[in-house]
Image (cartoon, rainbow, N blue to C red):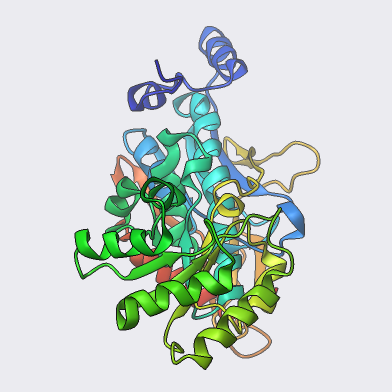
Length: 386
């Protein structure tokens, strides 16, 4: 059997920490059920990130849609900063207390993946960025990984189901296994060309058997103008000076008239390597760094009880608004009822926390993944370089 929870178990509140179940039991027995406001906040971000991309809200709405509660939230894909509420639930506590574990799980991991993808996309610029990391994680969550990576900025994903969810064709080249089965890099590329339709670019993986430079030349001479790109997936134990390998291969291809052959790279590329590789690289395949991105540690905290601001120590009580200037992009956090005029730069503020559910009604049209991705890319253009 697969060690997974089903949708029914999540919706029925079975995926919860036991102390929430015991809390519900006590409140029922004592006939206590306050009307509360609870907010979801990340007090800090992993790896010294300055910002993150809120993701997972579509699944959260699916979880909460039949509960008699009110929801204010940032849009999925919103860039946020530490201490900013991204989601607020208002209602009788007993109606949603057992869902805290699931809500946090839906947003913490997806937000980390989307943020890591956004960071890579900001570094890579206009170069193609592909998500290759689903194989490193449990297959049940592969679609969530691929969707989150795409929303964050990846241009494509590799898993078939992931492609279905984002509405895009999955992307991929040739695995080492095909070359090993056939016995030759050149013969493998030729076989690919003979069998796979012409709508798929011919990209040769060139580091299975021979030196990268000579294998580039071999496939370029064999395929001619049909060759779209070569992919370098050199393992870290063999790569040496990866940038020099790329420079050498580029020189030899250009010298022989193959300047149009693009360079794809994969195989454990780190964020800090991207700026140095950008002048030589046309596309990146990023795997584990995105799929195994650190989770963002959101927590849920009650901030108001029966109309009275109240929170545990270390938390600011009361409902809040998160304002962002539409000109200079400066943010403010204010009490929900406090008015604010124009920004000091003269720009107007937008409240990022909007009412999206009022008891039984969802007042929010869930956007398509591509629309959310465009929203993310527009925001990160205004952020400082990493």
